[in-house]
Length: 90
Image 1 (cartoon, helix red, strand yellow):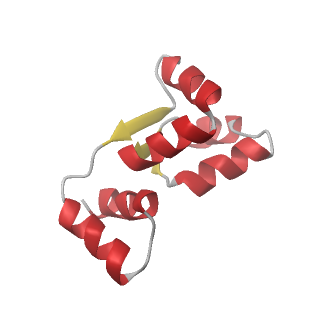
Image 2 (cartoon, one colour):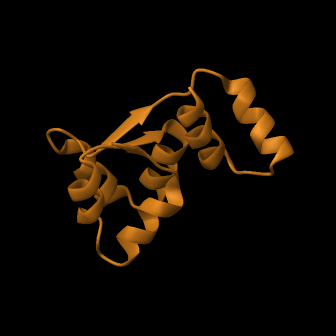
Image 3 (cartoon, helix red, strand yellow):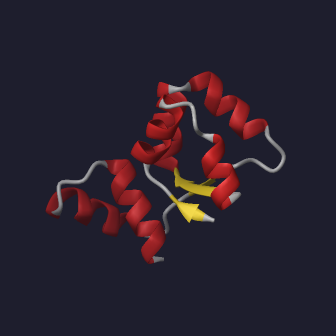
């Protein structure tokens, strides 16, 4: 299991090697913001991945939105990156 932001997933999708994430980690935890980015950028693939049993992408919500906001403001990270880091911290 691993927690990821959007760039890792879109990079392996772009080279046609998404299967590596499944083989290496079985489950990839992504925050809600990353799920939304993937659904927007790769809607068909995202839908297919969500229908797998068990799904390789597990969407989790952050429990501390104040930490997310602080990362966005102080470190100038985007929402998906900030949420992924907060999931790791908690």
